[in-house]
Amino acid sequence: MIKTDELISEAISLPIDIRTQLINRLLVSLNPERRDIDEFWMKEAEERLKDIKTGKVKTVSGEQVFQEIKERFQK
Image (cartoon, rainbow, N blue to C red; front, side, top):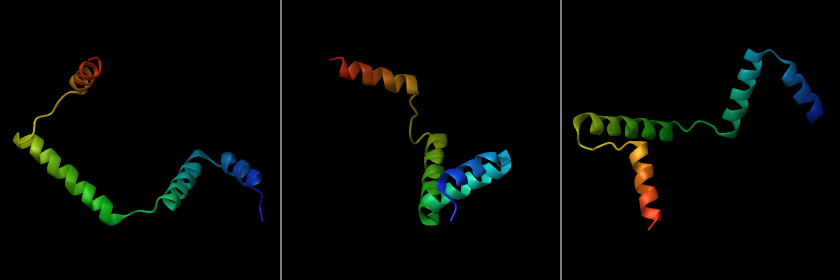
């Protein structure tokens, strides 16, 4: 069996496109796809975007959010 250090050295010496594929596969193996969760979040994002576009909800800038947080915690 190949030693970890040897494996890492070999991986580092691969061309960038192959390393990118390797990284992607390793990450997927650590966090396998959950289609049901992905679908839920896609629907949620679409619903939130629709609510923004129709005016159902009002957006707040990040700057305003941080200003309100700052004011709240300075009291």
